[in-house]
Image 1 (cartoon, rainbow, N blue to C red):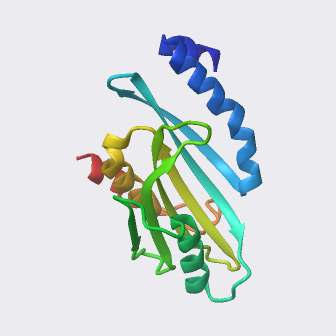
Image 2 (image 1 turned 60 degrees about the horizontal axis):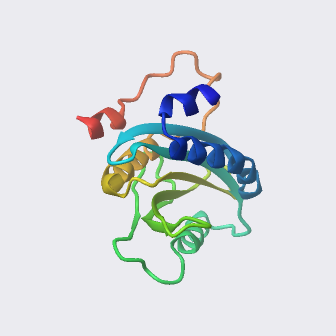
Image 3 (image 1 turned 60 degrees about the vertical axis):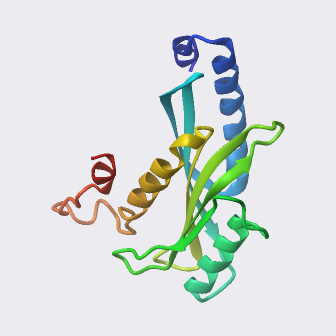
Length: 178
């Protein structure tokens, strides 16, 4: 990680990356099972980080539609924020799924960040899968929303080792970037 910090060049960027890495351990408290960090060119600061996470949460509701709706309502908060998005997604799997996007306050700072999250019923209830993409790059909010929605359409609940000749699905991410 020191090589990344050195490549960023600025002391501020190095400090932000260091704080981000220190906080990743706290994600396990939120049932996060996977994270990925993206570093993107951005003006005027030079580089912007994004964080993708995947969490699996147990739900106490038997109906997956209700469980997804409750999770989405909790993610959205009690008051709609300006510029926020809330919508249901139709997935190839037909599993209930809801997207929630908008700006959030960064803890311990007055800076705002953009976050898009998807709550999706797990094929084997009683679980909800939550995908999230967060970035301080507010000007790319629409692109981040499109990217997470494209990722959501690729999620499957099969054992990747069970079918050696599984057909590759077309990438919706390349569609978004075209």
